Length: 578
Image (tube, rainbow, N blue to C red; front, side, top):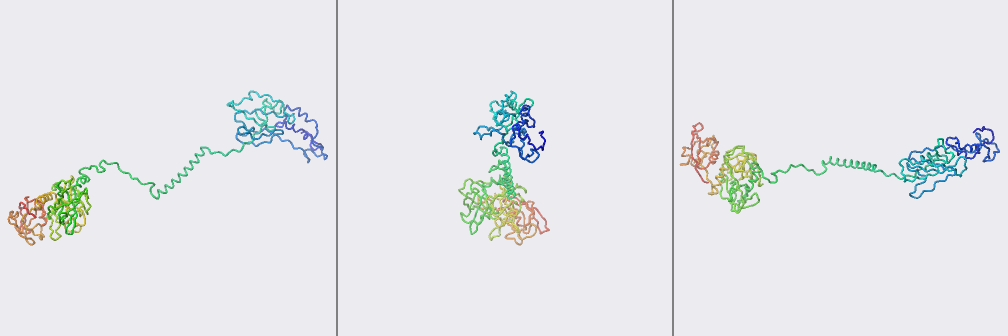
């Protein structure tokens, strides 16, 4: 204003009509179309209030005055989605109606992107009075009215409410000669303020968020489960039952055939022909083993197994199949420690093949089958440890006779109950009859029924000798012994077996016997038989009994004491029964 301050006269600027100020632009300059209205405003007019009787200065001094109208500036459209604070509507502007029915877009809602806003109603010009409509605005050109590219033609534009006074909307025309016309020919209308959107409902988590939450929960559960499993495994060493690996099926498994030379193959073929014997009588009982000789029911065993049997039913025979039968003793010989038992009424007997004990060599594998400690069907294995091992067994009981055996020695375990069982070679043939063992601490071999157990020194009667004796027992009921016709001095402690002398019983040299015919005399010492040294009288008996009656022997005899001359003598063995 150009009026001087502090004049004491009422100022004319505050008495101007308010609408003149309302016609100003945002920059404070009046538009060209309002020049006349501005000239009219410069003329004096009636003040709104009476003259201040106290002459209060209008500006810069204390006193009442009207407040200056606010300066209106174009509102900057905020980014999409940011709510605008609601502005107070201009004087005379109707308020928006109540909430429209469901489905009808609110009048103050910003139209979707790409849809042109409809032309607003014409605003009051600078020179018009409040509430008077201005002249109609010219129709927008095609350039202004054309919808943006990509706007579907079928979409209906949303009507906008009347913008507040002084706000311009780009792209909208104004009334002709109105104050909203800018240089350049492009019209701007007052912008209707966009009310803030209604409170948005709680956001529903997206699928990706739900997946993320689920993954976190799953990871947490897996971690807890893994920790628990790890602690259990550390404490117990396992989670489930242990399943150990196993080799694939063997073609020979489940009872299939085994090679004939294998231990299993030998046992499979031999077990049906091996029996367990229980003999009782005279207040004693013995357990041993036997094996089938023929299909007529003859079974070979040791004499000391069945010597206590008294009566027809004193021997019980049990086969590997579990079948049992009653047997009787048809013959026995205590000197050979052999006996034959016969059973009747038994079918399907499986005789064991007999081998040649003279063909056995030291180191050959052997298999022993029996019932040690009444454990029937027990199979043990070993080798031939020695051949022609002279042993004596028995004779401890009153009236019992000493057994002299030129035995096969084996390390196959033989224990009480193995007596009478077969000792078989690698081809499954019987080469011996298990009879005695060397017990720890004992000075001689003992029947295995009278010893504590095996120490790896077992003895078997050679099958060649057992076969001859068995045939005689079955055919004649008794066996014959080969003899040379002399009586030996069993107390002689020198090297060899001395004939007659002290300790000898009966006639030293039997007249007409083999020794008498060979020229042997009392006091002669026999040192060798068939080239093998003789240590004492028992060993001479063993060497002789290993042959058949009628066999020819070559002896080395020393006469005249320890320093006497030695000579060779040939003789034919005789026979003695009992």
